[in-house]
Length: 146
Image (tube, rainbow, N blue to C red; front, top):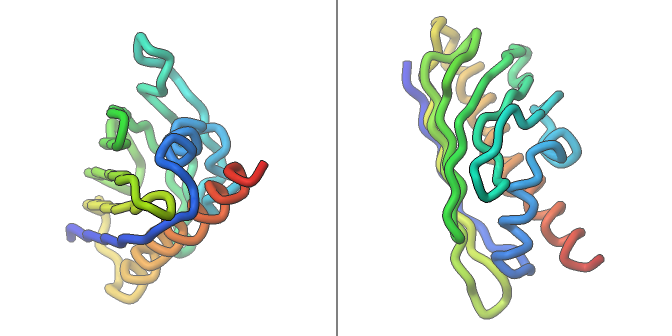
């Protein structure tokens, strides 16, 4: 069963700070509740994260995932390479500069390998969207004020 989640929100920090936080993969467990571990396995030629291993727990289900990232000046995209619980995952952050800071669009599409009750899937989906909005906002604004 494919699940898609999307949210849009604003943060009081420039896009460069948002991108800095997103590229700091190893800090994911600090601001993203579902992330238990995050490590960079390989980098692109410019030093940005390419292949990443994460351990995620959502709605009581833990999963180890390998993801491939691609970057532009205003976006972060990742796709699933391998996981225990998911057959597909595609995530995107798109950052646009605003007068007050940045506007962020977050989209996450996942396909589960196993069937789960709709209530559990919806809870995990809400957690992903809330983490993107609240966790990223708090971390970006914290770094911006440092």
